[in-house]
Amino acid sequence: MPALTTTSDGFLLHGEPFRIVSGAMHYFRVHPDQWADRLRKARLMGLNTVETYVPWNLHQPHPDSPLVLDGLLDLPAYLRLAQAEGLHVLLRPGPFICAEWDGGGLPSWLTADPDIRLRSSDPRFTDAFDRYLDLLLPALAPHMAASGGPVIAVQVENEYGAYGNDTAYLKHIELALRSRGVEELLFTCDQTDREHLSAGTLPGTLATGTFGSRVAPSLARLREHQPEGPLMCSEFWIGWFDHWGEPHHVRDAADAAADLDELLEAGASVNIYMFHGGTNFAFTSGANHDHAYSPIVTSYDYDAPLTESGDPGPKYHAFREVIARHAPVPDEPAPSAAPKLPFTAVGLTRRAPLLPYAHALAEPVRSDLPATMDELGLRSGYVLYRTTVPTAGDGLLHFPGGVGDRAQVFLDGAPVGVLERERHEENLPVRVPRAGAALDVLVENMGGVNYGPRIGAPKGLFGPIHLNGTVLSGWDCHPLPLDDLDAVPFTPSDATSDSVPAFHHGTFDVTTPADAFLALPGWTKGQAWVNGFHLGRYWSRGPQRTLYVPAPVLRPGSNDLVLLELQATSAVRALLTDTPDLGPVVP
Image 1 (cartoon, rainbow, N blue to C red):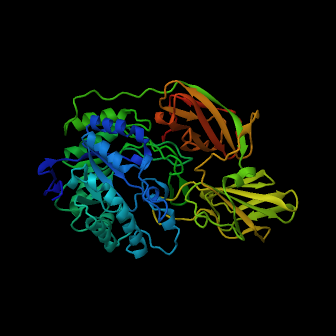
Image 2 (image 1 turned 180 degrees about the vertical axis):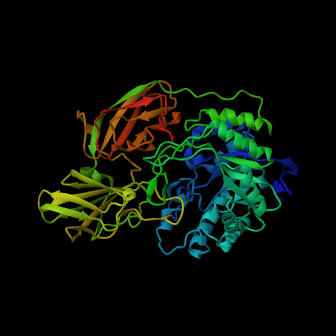
């Protein structure tokens, strides 16, 4: 018998009445050295459970590779720490996770096949997921409640009713989990829309809802769909995420606390989404595509009770008071903010232009027409496409398939324009300086769509590229994953500005490592690394103006900062500050 069971209106844990008071915290968005701190703060707020997704695309980056279970992906270690803190765990292994995460968690090697019907009973999809579970579940078996571990419930798929209605597919996921030894309670989650609940739930499996307000009608629709069993909001949205170019989203703490109070007063269980959002480090941010492609920022702060840097915010204290009215809260003081690094200026005195040295970072793939990132086997990062232009003079470059997702165009190394998928741009007027001029197109993958039918949309350049109607051929395609910068040929520089894509390097001293926020006034767009740790993407478009630097990334003594600036900078330094700036808020 599973540790967590249901009654006509609630849960039993080991046979005793139990209400789930949970918060979402994704281990892969938090530095591993900070997991214990964040889990302790979850318990101190009054949570008895934490919830996490499991990103298939990071754990199995290649179809035949061993499962990755170290560093940010050491899920067994995370589960051990949760149990040591006295917390239970809700596990959401997908296959699809959404989560504003690159590709919704589906691996690019799978979505690259245009014939696969994603999230369906297509055996090409289910067989791939089954093989993944064959690797994942044995590693997690000791941490299931049946083996004395903290995992008390496991989710089947994720908000499937918003995507499809293939009940056979959901049944396959259920049986795949059960046949591999998962004895714990299984549940589905869907928006509490009648159509979504009808399409996304599975007979015999607990149905839960997702919503952030309108508590009474949402619970009523859930009860209408499921006449008996616990009422549970498996994603109680208390904040929101940001796209580049939008204001920063926040939600009033008193408003969110009032809805949480109503939810708990109704006797329901809850998973607060998010308790602690963390960061989309490296190239892991996702994107949405409704009327236009909209990439998501690096921060996943989510206006959560625990901020991106792990400090209690207004919602932390408001929620703690609410939870105390309905469930036990530890008789310990609420945590305080962690110390921050003193203001530090970092001079960037060494540089390496990107275009001339792309060959040092990646051997080119020769192709008659530009190859997509999928065809190059590139999951994330950039591709530099290079060819020559046969004639000089004014002309029109035409990219009939658009670009995926942002293309910077250069002639003989000089920038001539930018094309963006989100603006549906396909044409660029140019003046070619000479016959035989080098044409470079640097294409950035801004993040895979994580929700809806466009998951797996290709990246890079698509099909033939025309100049004045003539197809350009003979391309060198340089895949640039930027997962190893050791080959970057830095040299000293005394330039006070730069207008071409280039890496910039500087050092700074730290006495005692502490959390910090990297501010880049005068810089435009690019990536940042501290001591080799990839902090993520920055962009002056905003709203986000600083990048979170976790204390464990720093070390006493000398530290390294590397920036890849893609466009232009009028600065020769960066700043480490003690205050985040996530941008102006939604009015």
